[in-house]
Amino acid sequence: MKYYRYKDEDSIVCVLCKHYCTLKKDSHGICGINYNIDSKLVNKTYGHPSAVHVDPIEKKPLYHFLPGSLSFSLGTVGCNFRCPFCQNYSISQTSVVDESITMMPQDVVDLAIKHGCQSISYTYNEPTIWYPYAKDIGILAKEKGLKNVFVSSGYESHEVLEDMPSWLDAANIDLKSFSHDYYKKVLKTNLEGVLESLIEFAKSDIWLEITTLLIPGVNDSSEEIEKMAEFISTKLGREIPWHFSAFHPDYKMQSTPSTPLNTLLNARKIAYKHGIKYVYLGNIANDSSTYCPNCKEKLIDRNGFHSHILNFTDGKCGNCGYNIKGRWS
Image 1 (tube, rainbow, N blue to C red):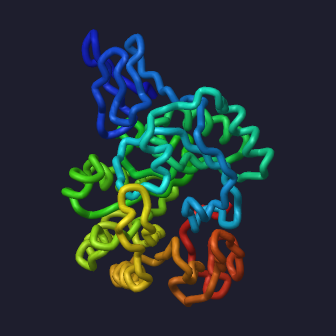
Image 2: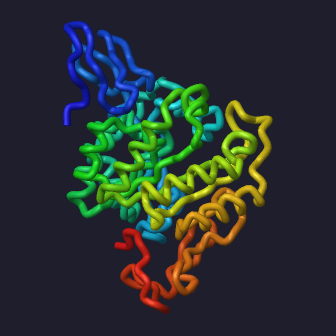
Image 3: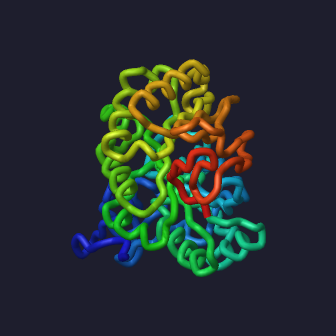
């Protein structure tokens, strides 16, 4: 795909995310890293990651995608959101690129293979804004038999959403709230755009899981969780795993208390009430194992970010044969 279109002789429109920023010559978009240089879109972070790690796939979090495997994970700088609770704000809320660090797509793939990873994850900051770099890595990764994972806030452009199934295997998308005002006034984006992306992901062959960070006094009311649960169960599918994560004070929300366990338990109860079959709690000590929704057999035992497969083969419960949705190989 082409990552920009011409608007007039002085401007181009970036088509990486739903902001669709108009860029005049030598200017950048909301993300701070995509520029109009000589009437072309130039991504300043291409080949310059700011964070590189080998992570368990469970850390993304993805629980129904290659459990127990390692994922080579990288991020750059910049973001198209302005989340005041961001745990990676040191890289997401800056546009300063360290060009002394260079890692071209082939380098990333080679390192992933060297470290025994089964996938490459585009994460830590919003990968949509560095989609050209991610896709170039992803195409090479697929040639080597590796899978590709997006960890995103879900503000991909329509053009990117249409292009992604050609190379992407899985995604974890944040549903940060169900308040239009919160998305607009605080996060500086649009809830409708995220919901549209979630629907498109759910329709595609890309494996989808959803994460909601529950923040006390912000998005943790039963009423708001009910709305999210209804949307997921009716518009996306009850087989999609939903992760509720506990908030811990960070960035601009140092005075906000951590999420109590009872808040997460209440959220899980609401999700189950709406028929959502796989609900997991994160950032807090709890049982995060996968159970068969039909016979309640424990299928995948999880301890922290480590998974151990029990009575479960070829995507089916070893006790009753129920088909557990996911990407298991």
